[in-house]
Length: 277
Length: 286
Picture 1 (spheres, rainbow over the protein chains, first blue to last red):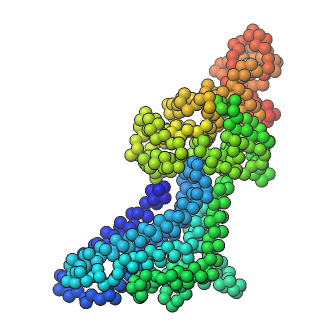
Picture 2 (picture 1 turned 90 degrees about the vertical axis):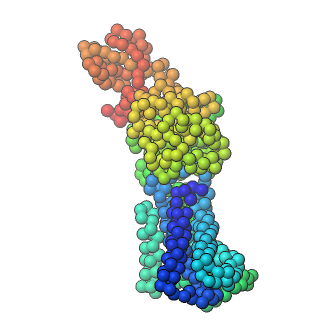
Picture 3 (picture 1 turned 60 degrees about the vertical axis):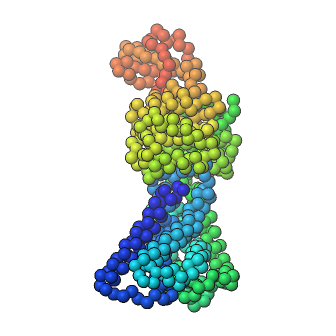
């Protein structure tokens, strides 16, 4: 609970987004009727794209929110000295760090998911009331399957990006000042050195691969984002077992989880033994 | 009496400096121990070791646990107030109560609310909006709601006005303290806690210079207050401390008989502050 109180943006932002979605919807319909435009022919594709862009919008905003949350959470308590209070209570450092990781990988995806669903419902409702194809809007896409896929993809994304997430968390607990700068410059310097001296690790590629916007789910040509938006097939069929298998068979996933485990252990260790005198 | 803290040859080194140097002591249930020392004497380092916040060498048991290994478990029965206002600014009193209830197995919300009723702190307040004194009252109220055995205080009343300070120590001595519980407190403001302490320890350059139950101080030390014309005589009797007090001069003597001094002036009990200066100066060779 502490996390949601402290980082009130986590629940305030979704509310702001939803209000904007309502206003945008009303604005569009209002403008359309005022101009006398006929609404476009409702098709699966149009609905899919609308829902998809709403989803990507919410996801995009939250990506930054997660980033700021992780980079700030362990640094802020040191900055305001409240760490002395938190650490005077019977909560181990492992528990404290894992709680923050849990927020980033489970609670926030859940918030994203609910926000997207709410945005979809608002849009579909307002559009069906104002348009002529009222009943049709809700039936073109099987929303149950669509939302289920969405949730799965969000959680898998958390797993896939875990090395990045834990790196931010580590910077938050380790950085003396400005964890944000260390979190970004260290990888950048690493990439540059890798390039200049042709070390050949391909650090840049490895990192880029973890950034959700460019990620390939299951190694197909369908990009991660496309998968998330469900523009193509994913809203029509439930994600099957084979998709899971492909996801969990990637050696990269497991390598990433090992790295993430390492960063998590380092984070706990830093919080446990850091002595600022 | 049951031992709450047991330290043996405790060491902590920072580079070439020994912040804590072969420190050994015990604190038993029922004691209120004052740890008194100048800045940089090693007080905070010692407290940090007790709380398991830093590594140390030597043997240390707090409430039967090793602070290095079982920190979280230990903190179920140990409370701590740091020398800086450490309550998070963003939190509200209501949230703080809920959080304490969630993580402390024996948190008694009613008890804490009972203490808050005597203050101007309400559950609707955010910590940010409270004065320094009110923050300390809130922190104390939280601690009163938890059934701990040992309370460690690091300069808890720093920067508070005298009313708050007195109230703070009165509450601790009368309402927290009992035969099963112990308190360890560090402070600069010796005079204020003097009458509450059952024992006093002086720390200087990382070493414990002095460790004595307060009731024994009268057996070993005496204070002589003399007029100026007797200063010379008093000086010759080998005081461990001398200082002026108004138009009179004060001397402290160790392990001497009071009868030998009565003809010179008024004999009494030395204050901890003077005693502390006497002991620290003795070491520094002034």
